[in-house]
Image (spheres, rainbow, N blue to C red):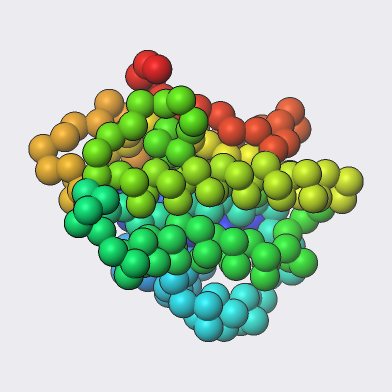
Length: 222
């Protein structure tokens, strides 16, 4: 039995993965701004946390009673489909606070609790991969996910002698409410429940073979 901490666990990929991990007998710490779907689920301890708020992150870590975390899945994310001309400083800041700043701050504060043989999995996007297909309206989102990839590589290098290990998954389209809100009518080829099986297995096993790697999880080309 492992202890997993999953962010963005109130819906979509995070919720599916949290439920799957708990069903498999693992201990799950699940955080989200809305934890209504997580209350009273056996094996899951939910916390309401806004990752764009540094004070809430600090309060959560201080209240966390678990001594060792085996897996941290940084899944929480914010997505906007907005043209560059239609964006502004505040919108960039809003998305980056969740996708980059909050992810980094939570990871930094949790490091003393993460097992030296543990695994930190950062959820990125194909849009953050250099040379991949790019789409109008995603300059904020995709650039933030590119930052997540670079952070993953840097952290793996910084902690390569001591652990934990850090890897990133660059996802193609997965059918979630966040995707549906940003791209109404678009149907992704993979559901959140389907992807959860891959994510859980990767989180528990892949650090035996990978460190500082970015795996492209997409059936599309390029």
